[in-house]
Each structure stands twice: as structure tokens, then as C-alpha cells.
Length: 224
Image (cartoon, rainbow, N blue to C red; front, top):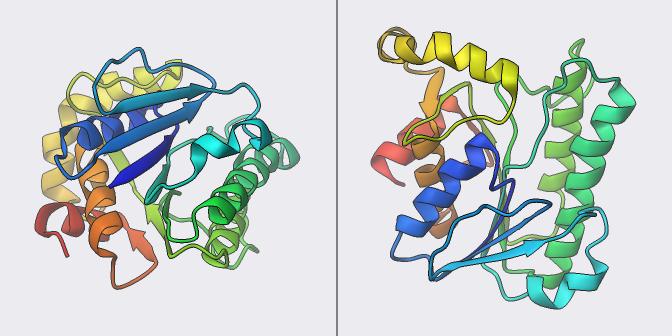
């Protein structure tokens, strides 16, 4: 399997990249982003591209892939809806349209979030925009598209978030993860589990297109 990964330097993307490199069924993993991962591996290829909204100059390098794991995203904290929509909806859909045109047999997996609003009419701005993004992706001519909606994500294997206030949060919440997992197993997951679940879904599909946190954990643990 050949995979394109966006958001490879973020917390979730780092976990997905790790699982892709470990999986013997993944032949090639191409990271596409504005920054290098600073990793070296025989399966790893990287394209550094400053304007992800315009992939016209690198389209030949993006064809003949089986799956795309879209882990790119930003926090909505402090952002106006228009600005958040540009980096969440507009950018994602632009990339997806290009990949769908180049790879009609591709499986596209998008990391959304718990409480995403599929009606696009709720009170939470970020949830509406995420819902709009999910709905648009599900209409695209991919072989299949799946929306992952994780809840609390525990980073493993030395992975760290780049966002400073998230780092402070994880410094407090991290030691509590075993308790959270015991008390609220439906609402917590790990970077490792998200990566494994993505690979399982890309290989074998899933019975539904929107996977909530407990679905992600089930697919990670039991496969399909």
C-alpha cells in the first residue's frame, strides 16, 4: 500500500507516520506539508510545499497512491469563523479534489473530532465547519472516504504537540490517562491507536463512514 500523509509533524500525524513506517504492508509513505519531519526511513518520501492550497506544480508526484491520511488541522481557539473555515474547510477540500482527480481508487481518511456537527447548524463554530468539511468529503469521488472523530488523544512513544498550551494541558492530563481510560474508555484514545485504525480501515474498509472515538478503538484493537 502507498500512502500520502498530511499533517505529519503534528501530534496525530506523528503517531500515524510511526505506525505507517512500522507496518510491513505499507510500501511507501509520502508526507506532504510545509515542514520536514526530520525523520529518515527507506519507505519515507517527503515533499515540502509552502502553499498546500495549490498543488498544481507537484501533481505528477501525487498520483498512484492507495490512501490519504489527512491529519492536518488547527485549534479554533481565538479564531474567527472565516479564518478557521479557510484553513479547515477550504484547504482540506482543495487538497482532496486534487487527490480524487489523480487517484480515483484512493481511500481518504480525515481526522475530524468528537462532537462534530453534521447538520452544519449547531452553536459551536468549529463543529459546524468540521461538519461541513466532512459532508463535502463524503460526496467526493474517492473509492471510499472515512471521517475519524477522536475524543481525548493521549500521545505515546515520545510524541509531543507543537502547541504550547496543549503541552501544558498534557503535562497535567497525561499522568491521568490510565484513570481516564478506565473510567471513560469510549472517549479516550492514543496516537498509536489512531494510526493503527487508519491503516486497518484503509486496507479493509469499515461498515460506516463516520467513526466515533469508540469505533476507532474497536478498529484499532480488533481490526474489521
